[in-house]
Image 1 (cartoon, rainbow, N blue to C red):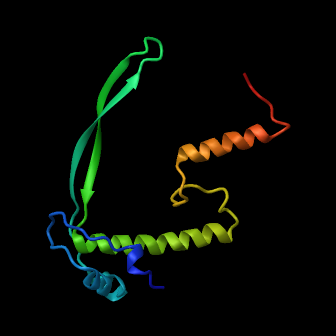
Image 2: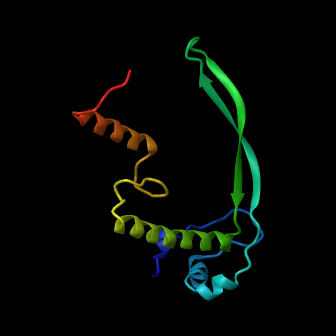
Image 3: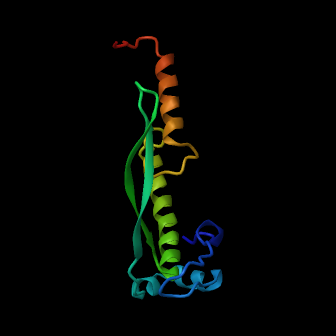
Length: 139
C-alpha cells in the first residue's frame, strides 16, 4: 500500500545532522522498504524544557505557582522523520482496520485521530449516562 505524500510529507527546516530533503527524494526512500531497512538512523537530538505550571487554590481563590514541569523534546534527523511519518501512517491504517474488524471502533479511543479531545469524549459519556433510566446515583 502506498500512502499519498500529502498524508505524511511535511517540509522540515530545523538544524540536524543531515540536510532537509524534498518530497521527491523522501518518497523515493520511504516507498522502498529495502532502502528503509538499510537506512542508518541518526540519534535523536533531545533536550528538556521546563513548563511553568499554575493552579488555583479552591479555598482562597488565589493562583498557586507549582514547580516547573520538565518536558522532553526530541528531533529526529530529516530523512528519519519522513520515514517515521510514513510508517506511522501505515501502522495507523492497520490499527484502524483491526479496531473496526473486531467491532471496537465505538469503544476504543486511544491512539486514534477521531477529531475530538478527551474532554469531548468525557462530555459525551456523561450525556449518555444522563439518558439512562435505570442508573443508580451515588452521593
